[in-house]
Image 1 (cartoon, helix red, strand yellow):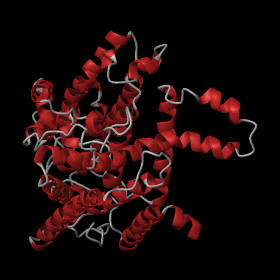
Image 2 (tube, rainbow, N blue to C red):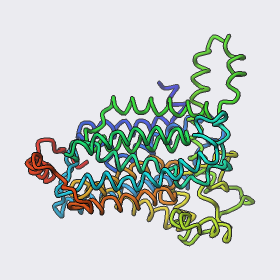
Image 3 (tube, rainbow, N blue to C red):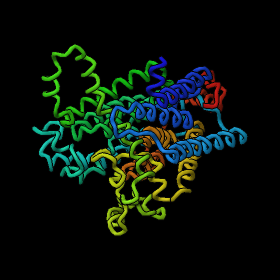
Image 4 (cartoon, helix red, strand yellow):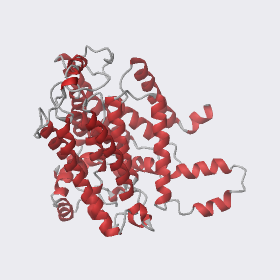
Amino acid sequence: MEAVLAAYPETCVLFALATVVLLVVSLLKVDYFFPPVLYFLVQTLMLGVAYLKLDPAMTDFHLNTWLVWGGGMAAFIGGAVLTQVVWATKGGYAMPSRITLNREYSWPTHFCASFLAFAYFFIGVIGVISVAGNFVLLTEQPAYWVSGRSSPVLKYSDFFTSGAMVVGLFGVASFKSINPVRWVRNASRFMVVFTMILSFLTFPSRGINMLCVGILLMLYNYLHGRFTWKTSGVVLAFALAFFIGVAFLKGQYNDWNSFMAVNKKTQDFTEKVARKLTQLPYLYISNNYWNLDYAFNRPSDAYEHEWTYGIDALYGVTHLLRMGDGLQDSFGWDTPFNQSVSKKVHLNTIPFLWDAYKDFGVVGLFFVPFFFGILITWCYRRMASSKTPLFLLFECMFVLWIFLWSFTTGYKQSMYWAWMTFFVIVCVMSSGKGVLPFNRLPANVISHENDRNEDIAGQGENRDVAVG
């Protein structure tokens, strides 16, 4: 134990902090996805993994990097706690163990309107087939189509990357706790499975397809039952297996055959295979943090990114308007992939704090996470009193942002702006009795509405006892 602590002191401390928080959360029965808890766990665990230093590019943080990383966390948690305090003093709804609605909502309209989002996604499916001649997964060389940013099918990426949006819209209608209309639930479950299969066939990307699974898991947590240790372990194992499987598909283990030939006779073969398989997942996590340190501590002769005056923070919108790339080229700004801070070629993802700095300066390092701490926690609380599933869908998306903020900046990705647009359209169309001539509830289930209202008000038997 002492040898491990001496070899990996930062990792041990970060893992210990995460373990303490997990124990407290479990004892107090706080939701793991309560925004400040989730942010703390994601950042400490991922930085702890990075500090294993399985690649020489992962060097110790400079002091200013620790201040940026820790300051961003403090700002986010501060915004979340402030929102929580204000919510409690204003007599806001308690968070039930399962989210329900407290007024009329037309689920048949929701189901029909969700096909608008599916049509948007399907444009990308047809576009990919028109370029590749088939679904990418079924082509002779899928690695050619999914590798790099120069793939010809990426001109349709704004569309086919939105499979998770469709899964979210149909997924929220699949749970009995929120939707009492049986035929809508059954049809929505079919559309969820169909969309996930179609998304994987169209473009077998790790990120895109894990978003589909991720948003469905978030809905499960809020609408069916809170995540447990066992559930989290199964999900983590699945994610690792899926990551490695897609890496083989993309040819990212291109030296695997030679590795096996050289190592198959060694005594520690199993250990070396395990190290080889986990090498790529490690690089995908750790490169974010070594790039963060490099970005704030580059050599004096290295390119320094210009301040974008906050304009490029709207890249997700300007890209959809076909203006974003032109603005970046005109001003010489870096792309959302931040190649200028890549410490190693092609390993150029970086936490959102760098985007906050280059868009808003030093103030952005604290203002941006503080703002999102308020926004995400407010959406989290509003789920319990919302009249539509809108805040639930937004919160599921924001939870995915917190997971991915170690890699990229959510609000600068155009696909999320498309998600928000369709979430609003579908939920507004379905509010009340909806725009279609359907009633939300058949007569024989009206009586269940009173039970739901009791749960929403925090008086139901399933109410959580803690703030999360």
